[in-house]
Amino acid sequence: MVDADNIIKDLQFFYPEIVLTVTILFVIIAELIPSIKKKLIIPFLSLAGLLLSIFFSVRLFDVQERFLFSNMIIVDHLGVFFRIFFALASVIIVLLSIPTFKRAGEYYALLLTATLGMYLMASSTHIIMIALSLEIVGITCYVLAGYRRSERRSSEAALKYMLYGAVSTGVMLYGFSFLYGMSGEVNIYKIRDILMLEPIDNLLLLVSVIFILAGIGYKIAMVPFHFWCPDVYEGAPTPVTTFFSVGPKVAGIALLIRFVFAGISVQVSETVEQWISIGDIDLQFMLAVLSAITMTLGNTAALAQRNLKRLLAYSCIAHAGYILMGFTMFTGAGINAVLFYVIVYLFMNFGAFIVVDGIALRLKSENIDKYRGLASRAPYLCFALTVFLISLTGIPPTAGFIGKVLLFAAVIDSKLYWLAVVGAVNVVVSLYYYFRIIKAMYLEKPISADELPLAIPRIHIFLTTLLLIPTIYFGLFWSPLREWTTFSLNFMLSID
Amino acid sequence: MITLDSCLIIGAALFTLGFLAVLTKRNAISVLMGVELILNAANINFVAFGFFRSYEIHGVLIALFVIVIAVSEAAVALAIVLNIYRNMRTVNLDEVDSLKK
Image 1 (cartoon, rainbow over the protein chains, first blue to last red):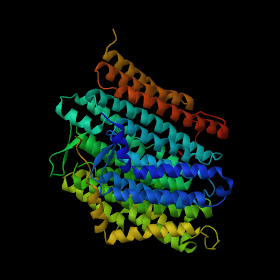
Image 2: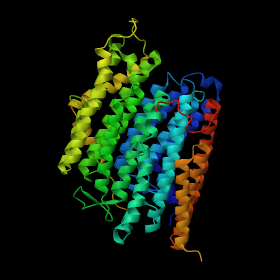
Image 3: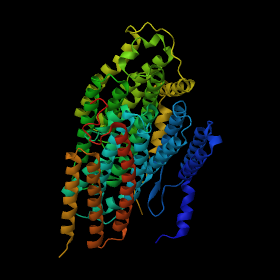
């Protein structure tokens, strides 16, 4: 059925992952050599590997869509889009980690392994690959969350992340076992093709879909699988939190797109970008309700937070809700809006966390009270944080506004007015807690008379600028980004 | 007489027990044992469906991979729990609450 020649032939479409794997091995070896360990070689080695991997990923855009390794992995535009996305996110995280984890070689090895797992999450189509890639990301992330071993908060974050993660993976596998049982297939494309033809037990399908959503929902911090999120975000080292807030979350969204639109629903026709779910389950309504609950809970819980990392954690939950809105109408426009939003989300969320990290390195605190009157001590960072928070709220002229407009437009197009109303109310609620930070920085008087400017590490200033530019630029000229997401939307829908 | 149904019932029972353990036990190790039960419930389902419905070998393969996943997860999980014990002198989840509730 599958011969060795085919597998070797498929390797040429697997270069991004191979490059990353080799880099991980090099990093682990370099960590063992004392003369290398002292210098900054390891972070730069990781950066080189990631950039090379981006290079090979971009080349995959030209390749005809295909399955690799006997239908384990898929190569299509959507997968390549997410590969580039994750590699970019990791590049930023590696740079951000340099002041904090200068000489920790295994930290970078873990980070790259998580990136490799996210690559695979975005492109796996086989139950084994889905479970394995989820666990590659999961296990490395548990270790990353507890990276400061002697710190109570960090190890507690690792424990909570790990317990919830292990349970949700188990539940997800149990759900997959029923999909396998109903269809006898292990590739989600084939499962769908078989379930479409045969009469199926709708209740069983519904239960297994809910169980699988538990596994994916845990990754994207969707209510009711979000309990780990605030504690883990607060306890983990800030560069790691920054990584969690975008990396594994968007990997979960990539997997959700693949699972929902290739696994349990089918395109109406070749030309119409509208999907219908298989069986007789109202998946659209389920996702809409989950989306509404997720954003409402995230936003209302964020109102009471004093710790900025915790506040941003709840804001991340709320954003998972906004992104889920894009899934509810089962249209191409919806997925397109999701892709657009995740890119924008990368810029603004990374930006906010990086500013918080830079300030926390000097103030030793993430409490909002410490931010009073900070604008006079760190004017540039406070300005940047203001822009990122405005963008997270969704106010023009920032990229976050365009992202939200596209999402809401897609929702209104498919006549889900109640969801649009819930979303709009949520944006207003979020305005309050985002602007509380801005108010503290600019309008309130500092607690201490200490007026010395903060000495922020240069890498933070650099990264903030790097993220600030696209946050504003794409708010004014969004069409290039929109074209790229439309181009990436071509994902393979059938299996031969 | 062993049928598919009896295997699925055992699987469902294991899953329920595992999930109950996760929800009710306050000791981190007990919660991990509950997770193992959940994973093994999935394994029983995969193997049973593959065997009784004479599907291809995939069910058994997945079960093997799930075992590997469970082992690696347990290794990391126990390391994390050990680390918690070093830092806090307890593995009771109710007492591990230095982060704001």
